[in-house]
Image 1 (tube, one colour):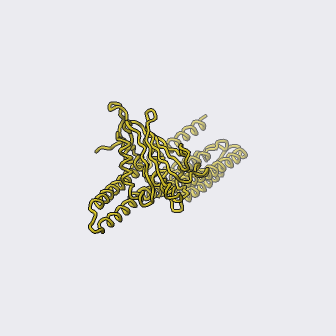
Image 2 (cartoon, helix red, strand yellow):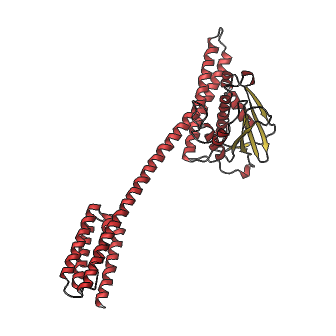
Image 3 (spheres, rainbow, N blue to C red):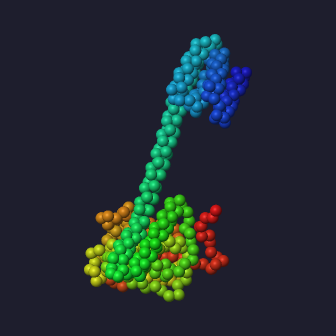
Length: 382
């Protein structure tokens, strides 16, 4: 009974030591090692002074567990060997008890010490591997996110920059006339300024999307936003020989969305429509932009007169980095989808409803609620 009481007290002491060491992770390792040495000496003394029937050496496993938590694998292996040596010495020095029972207990204790050390080291190795994998995954994720952000900005800014170049060339031509056509040159300069501001807004919106910020929703006139984009696209439409038809519904409710993002969606759809008609006869190159009300939503439609979409293209239409264009990046429609969904709408493609060849893209936009019912715009202050 006395021996059992001693084992119980010692077991609680080891548990208390392990718990205390884990609660104070900043203790010096030398102090921890000293505490482990004291515990090992106590286990050795207890195992030696009791008879063979008491397998006190098994408590060396607690020492191994603490070592695994605090020290390198080399130190753990050294302590494991020391614990085994102490177990053997204790068996040799034990004065009383059944020898056969003591031999079995010694073997069990040594196996327990060795297996604990092996499993502890494997666990630490697995944790280190998992940590390294998480670190690598985080690095890959950061690199991928940075790459996608860079590609998105490059793709989106390319449109206003191309429009600036086109308007700049037009401005030079107007100024080179005799006499210079200052009115037309002034209009070209206004388009340049508008496209430069649009490029700045695009970068700001894409950075905001990358940070996960909510769109800056506001009430605006969808038809006026369409007309503004049409004016900014005149030079590119003229360069490609594309006619533009505006079929804007009257008396539309104000839209409730991020105006810049909706205009960017429209700009992408216009550019895709122009690209889709590269092989269309010049006389048939025509894009139709329509707006209409559908319940509590507005629908913006952009239809081209191109060759239409193949079944494969319909399947991957909004996938990132998938494109049918030789020089395309495969980001335009993916960004359109994200922007439409971020503003509470959706985007999809159909064949033209008038029976003509080509594709129609539809975007839903929420109508502006009553002034008192409007939610937060997502704008940040401060």
